[in-house]
Length: 153
Length: 412
Image (cartoon, rainbow over all chains, first blue to last red):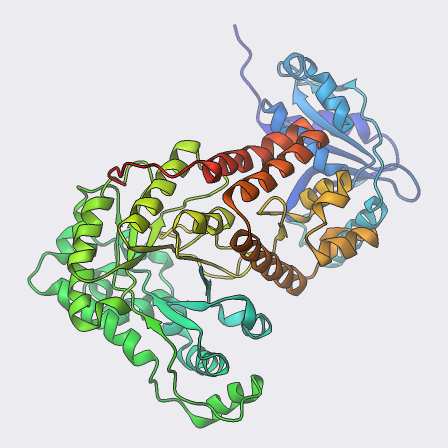
């Protein structure tokens, strides 16, 4: 019997468990100009930022979004439902050309099947500072985190 | 080519700063009805500053024909409806208008007369001296003469799917009656339709317009997005423009972008756009508010959100910032485009649009097409996804612009 596809939100917890073990801050729906990145793991101080786009099936669209996410994150991934991964891996050279990695997600766990590569950016550090500023501003508004959520490290 | 800007009351300074970069102003009824004093005072001062500027008022009557939640009717809708009177005021704000609402004797004439009367009287509104003084001062004008600028009148219009759609007949009846109220050469009606491929009535529409003495008209395909249009749609668009020009009509497009600008080469006489948006419009769109600021990328002839624009510029700054002082400055200073302020983005858009119009005016179809192909080559060098997401539309445009005019007139 064919496994039914999950909802995009079902991919979140396995991805959080994959990256959330360190001291990184987890930012959901992080705003990057008009778009929102599903999940960003930001270091508490110095360190590398990681962005993840969650997508059940449409890996090409996820890749496009993840490619743009490199404007903010040092490492950018797409997290795909495991049944979609083989098709995406068939285009691994395309992922590599954008430095985007692939995470395979099942109901119980997530694992990296293609490592992301750090691409150069002259504006990334400023972009990260801007996001942290907006996170700070949002954090000061009690109970108003509908657009930008912080999860405890 | 006439370049109309849609008036927005919240960016008046913008219209002053760029007064040399557009030819006319289109004022939606919903704005003039909601902010009559501000709109009138500002326009009167602006048009006095440049008496060559054309202006027209867009009735946007098709809004009331569409199905949308009437619980969301706002004051601007009610005020716009009040200009037309019944059935807009009696039914249009309660439910979508149907053909039956325009079936009684004399209703088309009454609605059209109200619509045209409002437009004629707008240029002669009596306003408090104090308000006029404010705008006179804003534009550093010594005197504030009455509006004498050329005005085009737009009769009520409705969306039709094809030549057999009875809504087309309603729109044409409005135009024919309007031609009895004002000189036909002062009319510039809107032919509003669902999509290019289905609308097949250009010959008969032009026959009716010609018989009424109306030679210029706006085409308005609903939600027509130049970048998403298929080669077939673009082909029909080009043919409709070419055949109109061949028949000595002056077609304009109500909402257009760079492809519309390029159609100057095929006979398009003008186009309109919003400030920082407005290359397409859904006539059933009923929500208000200002559009979110986006960055215009001149080489792509499209808006991108700042992060996507940054991504592109990071990949090929030399090429993609070449036509823009703003993009060049941000790139040279390694400043992220997310820091671009709304005012900067609007100014940049206007500069870009002005350059686009100038470029098309001064270059051949082959050169315009060549510039688009050059951009596509740069996108291909950056990556497969850039080529796929940004390059396809440019290729379709380039091909259509380079195509030679068809010798035989079809029904387009």
